Image 1 (cartoon, rainbow, N blue to C red):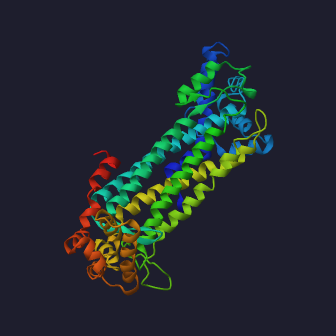
Image 2: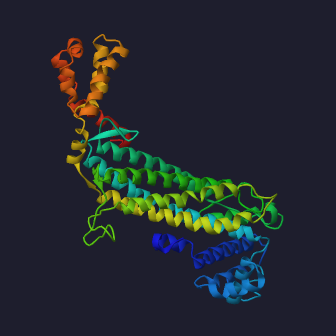
Image 3: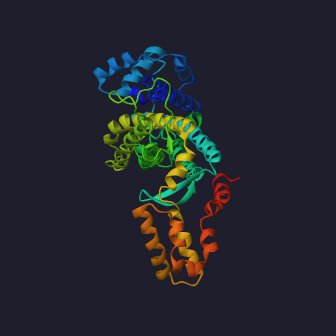
Length: 434
């Protein structure tokens, strides 16, 4: 987690003070349930809540842990310093450390997911706005980086919207997947704690009881969660790469907003570099870097080992904080992005009329020419456009064989740009449901 790429709201979820507050709530709610079941005195459960407004001393807990070499025991010792050792003697009754650690981690991941879902709404709003703004702005579509056929800038934004909308659904599912808690005791058998305690704690924390835990919550849930973050990161990069390509000097169909006083290069004052989207490409790599370790955490020894623990202490904050920053940066880039419609048309006309080759091909086959012969007729004229930058339509009109097959009027009819945009409204209705 690098402060340069971090936003406070998400960082706060992973602060030690937040973690200890969640630990405290887990223990206090468990005491309430135990008292309700008659396992511990109600006055002891009530006494635990004396620490409700306490700011737990992180340095003090670290000091205790330096001796105990156990983080949960250090916390419980510090809690007893606030509540009183006699009053706190039933805290953690029948529980094991993973009950606290795993339930807390899932609370943190759920909170992080809620922030990320809100972030995605910002991205979706920006993409939708730009899609409608440029629904009919013609640009050339490219395959393999080469001019293909006309499309619109609005369709480019719309397809990114559809992708991000799928990602939001995936994230909502991942949030649901990881929103479980376990208060099942050593090896998960509930031998020393009633399952009703788990039900109460989970209800109070907005979680569902894990159907079957060992001494840990199964890590396939977390693997799915981090895999989903990795997919979202890849989609961020997908948008970023398109913008970076559009900003290339030879293309310049779109560009990041360049603010007053901004500098593009320490050496070359003329530079306007796509630094934000290049940064997004890098941040996407960092998020994806957490996916494989999350997958490898699924396989633990028997009922529990802690090989996953050190991994999650890193990837939990790193992935969520980085993705939160990236989504907010992307929303800003899309919202303020500069579009150059004139350059889009100029680029398409670098090889005049060439992007209509398929339409001419199809019209020839409709006119009775075999596909093989039609392809040869179109390609021999198209290659001249590549080589000599001549006008494709003029080449066709000068080709006796093509003219014989189609006629002048039919050749000219193939160069109507509206032909390629006639179904834009249909696509938009599919994407945006309007």
